[in-house]
Length: 264
Image (tube, rainbow, N blue to C red; front, side, top):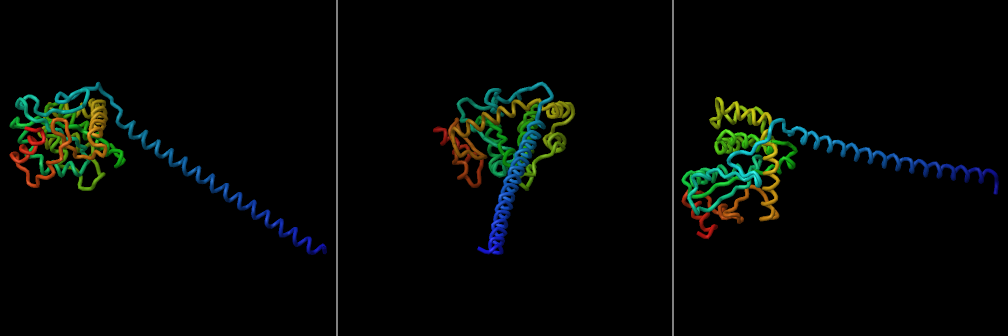
């Protein structure tokens, strides 16, 4: 073999080895870059979660709203006026849920009429799971504000105002200005009641109650329907869907449906 051929082969071999080393370096750099991206993503998630969990830390003594059961977190809005033996209608809701607003707009007047007349016992179970979906804390804050309204005897009025003012764009959420100033004014909370309401809200005095109520409500709801979504209704603790078949509800037609579901 001539010296020139050997030199060319050695040069070719050297070039191939250099290309192999370059490819390995490129692969290694890509792997390292991927790890960095994953780490950055994980850090971002941790920071976001920490920010949300840190923002709802309570600063005041914790209280349970007077209309609610401490253990389950269920509100009974007309316990003193409901007639003996009437069916119990329980609404599972999330204040950011568009479907809940639609149900409130369509069925709310009839439901409230039946509650006022004592022909049903009306309960609310307030969930906050949409905070996770929408990456905000508006469900939690709205639930906390509603609980604060119950502390001054204005749960129903405030509940209705929240849904009336639900943003058209899903995920926009509610501002503190709305929850502590605009909404209570619209709900008729003024004077000393407003001062007390705002202190409960600012101190997050109902925070523990709201979190427990959301947890227990979600657990119980999914035990009745593994595919739970809001709004979700029960009658005497059993899943109730026939309300959706009443296109133009009145107090009379809704009561007949509720009684049928209760076996009355």
